[in-house]
Image 1 (cartoon, one colour):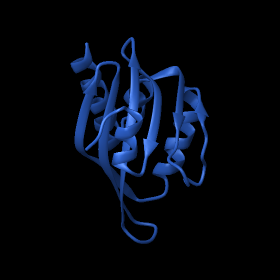
Image 2 (image 1 turned 135 degrees about the vertical axis):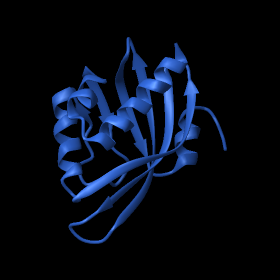
Image 3 (image 1 turned 90 degrees about the horizontal axis):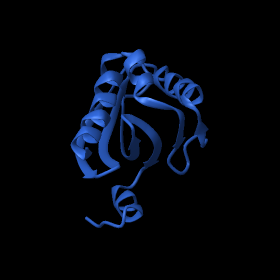
Length: 130
C-alpha cells in the first residue's frame, strides 16, 4: 500500500506540471486539510478540496510558467515526504523555492498536507533525521 501512496503523491506533482487540474483535484480528499509553511502570505489552514484548489490556482497565477521538480521522496506507510523545488518564471524575477511536503494518504486520496521550508524540520516532525 505504501508504494501506491508514493505513486499517488508523484501523480499529484505530475498533474500540477501538466496543468491537469481535474486529476490534481481528484487526488485530494473532499475534506483535505493543508497547512502552508511558516511565513507564507496566506497561512491557512486550507480546509476542504475547494479551498485548497482555490489557493493552489491563486499560487499558480503568480508566474507565466511553473513546475515542481521532485528531489526526493520518503515512504512512511500512510505518509509521504516529498522534497521539491518550485520553479516559476514570468511576472518578475525567476523563482526557485525549495519545500518539503508531508502528505497523509488514505483510501487513495491525500487527506492532509503540511509544507515546510526546511527539510530537516519536516524530517523532525516525522521522527526522522538527515
